[in-house]
Structure formats: structure tokens, C-alpha cells
Length: 230
Image 1 (cartoon, one colour):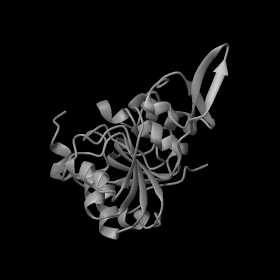
Image 2 (image 1 turned 30 degrees about the vertical axis):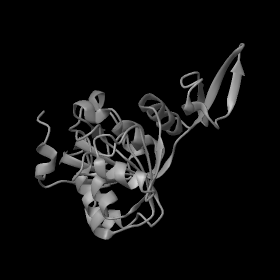
Image 3 (image 1 turned 90 degrees about the vertical axis):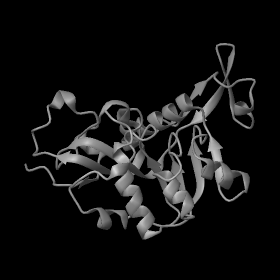
């Protein structure tokens, strides 16, 4: 039975994203951020987006393009300290920012991808991070229930893909990209290289194809990808 070919063009696949969508964005700073997919999202102009990303990128790149174009309603992130534009927009009340500790953010996404409703942790007890959250007692110990975090779409940047959607990631790009690929209803991957089916060693696949809906081949990498040398 032939495997479906999920390769597609960038402009066409980004049109699947409607106004008001929630979008998980891969990357750990610059590495693994899907800049080309973000740039196309900016060009098309979808509005009132909820963006979920470990960070808000630096000023003048990635998520900051969406912030500057006024497309973001809410940002769920672990920090925005490297992006003064994000800080300004939050302080002026122009976007809502939900801060989630980095490890908690990663685990909320992971459990969503695993099909779980959430998890219980004692991290944050006695701090403002616990305010308003459901408390759970287990074996005499109190913890916080952290709900799973899902999204309508995930945008990921892969080092290598095949037409079926198996993906590999380079270095710290694998910190969040594999997690978000599992936690969204529709996962769109941009890839530096798309190789024939069977050319990726099965043992090297970091996101299996069933979690990927669309693959976009990048003909070349814009300068923004070269800010951090590998």
C-alpha cells in the first residue's frame, strides 16, 4: 500500500489557519523556529491568534513579526524577556500573556499529545503560580492540577522530512518541536531537506509521520536562520 504524499506549498497550507486559531510554534529561541511558516502567516494576516511558544523570539524575528502586525490576541509562553516589543504590548494591555514555567509548559504539551487530561505537580506550591488552580491531595501531599495544553495547529521546523511526514530535528530544535507536533489537531512542518521515503533511518525519526499532516520543503534558508551557527 503506497504511503500518502503530504508535501504541499506553503501559501496553500497556511490558508487552512483561520482567524482566532490557537497555534503552537516550535523553537528554542532561534533554533527550530519555523520562520518561513511564520512569515507566510504574517503575509496572509490571520487575526486574533493565540500563540503558544516557549519564548517570543527576539525583536525583529519570528513571533515578533506576528506581534508587530497586530495578529496576536494571547501569548502563552515561559518568558518574553528577550523581546521588548512583547513586554511593551503586555504592559499596554494590547495582548494577554499567560506565563507558564518552562518545564510545566513542556509537560502540559506532552500530556496533551499523549491523550491525557493533565498532570499533578507540587511545583509552584506556595507561589503566585498556584493561585486559582485546582488543588489535589495524594498520599497526604498537596499538589496542583496542570491541564493538558492543546492547539488547533502546530508549526514546526525540521532538519529532514520525507514525503510521508517522518521528521528529524537538529540539536535544541528538538526541545519543543516533537512535543507540539503531537499536541495539535493539525501539524505543519517546514523542512530544510525532503528526502525520498525510506531514506531516513527509522531509528533516527524523532517525530513519526502519523503526527504530521503537511510537509513544506524549503528551497533555501533565509538569513534569519543563520543567526545561531550550528
